[in-house]
Amino acid sequence: MLNERVSAAKKIASELHLAEDAIDEAMIRIAQLAATLPTARRETNMSAIVGQEAMAKVAHALAAAGEVRQLLTDAHLALTVTQKEVGLGTRMFGAGVKPAAAKLVDEGSNDRSGVDAPAFAKAG
Image (cartoon, one colour):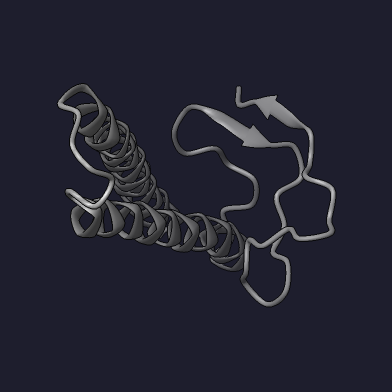
């Protein structure tokens, strides 16, 4: 039974990290596009009105990607709680930098408004 839970946790961790990496990559690409649009407009001496609707849509897409990233980090923290609930304690699944003391704030929200962010420690 423990082996099945560990195996499932490893699969979940792998997919979660892939999803986190994917949204980061999407945000990078959208941000690069957001920088390219006004640069191209200036380089071609176009009016500020030209492409404004497209620029607004790209800015909105970047904000939406940020919201998706927030949801994934909230899910990540919620899975930390689930991990303990299923008896896997503090086992590490995956590599990367993890907060020293990850905890849920405001019933599952990762919003740290007014709360000092924890120091980061390298996972080992």
